[in-house]
Length: 294
Image (cartoon, rainbow, N blue to C red):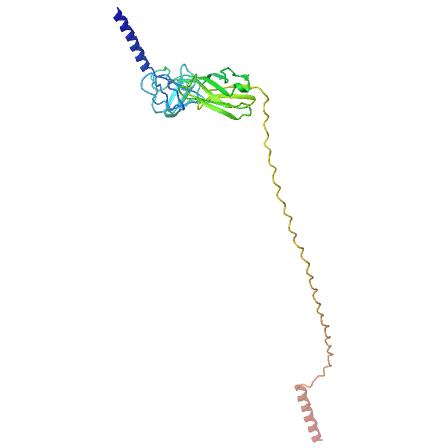
C-alpha cells in the first residue's frame, strides 16, 4: 500500500511537470513585441497593436500565412482585413474573430483592449498617498505599483511630473503588479502627477495625483530681454545744387534790308527794224529817179 501511495505521488508530480512544460509561460517584455509568443488559437492581440501574426494557428488547420486575411467577428458584426506580416489592430473593436479563409467559424484571434487595472502610490514610509496629500519629508521617495493586462505584449512606462508640469522622474515596469521607486529628493509643495501608459499601447493609460503640503511655488517669469536700440543713422544731407545761370543768348541784330531801287521803265522807242530800212532805201531811189527825170 505504501508503494502505491508513493507511485501516485510520483505520477502526480510528473503530470504537473509535463503540464508546466506544455503550457506557454508569459514572458515579461521590456520592449513591444513583434509577434505573439503563444500562437495557439485564439491568439491574444491588443487594440492599437501592430505585429506579425502569420504564424498564428487556425482552429481549422494550418496557420494564417502571409496572404492578406479578413477576420470576421464571431456571431456577426465588424470585420477587419490585415496584412498578416504587419497586422495593424488600431481602432478594431475588442472581441473574438475568425479568419474567413479558415474551415470553421471558431475564434482564431481575440482582440483585447489594453488596460491599467491598478495604480498605487506610496510615500517614503510606505504610506498610501494615491490621490491624497502628504508632507514634503514623506515623499522624498515615491513607490509606484502598477497592474496591467498587457505585460505579454508591452511594458508600462511611469512618468512623474512636478507642480510646474516638468518631468521629475520616470521608470518602466515589465511585469504586472511590479513596484518601482522614483527618487524625488526634496519635493516642493504642490500637486505631483503620476501617469502610466504602455510604451506603444498608449490606449492603456491611467493617472493619479499626490499633493505635497505647503505653499505652492509661483512660477518665476523669465524676464524678456529688452532689445538693444539700434542707433538710427542720421540721413546724409544731400547738398542742394547751386542753380547754374543759363546765359541769355545774345540777340543778333537783324540787318535792315536795303531797299531795292525801283526800276523806272524807259519809254520804248520803236527801233528801226530791218523792214523799215528797206522801205527807206526804196523811197530814196524813187526820189533820185524822179529828180533825174525832171
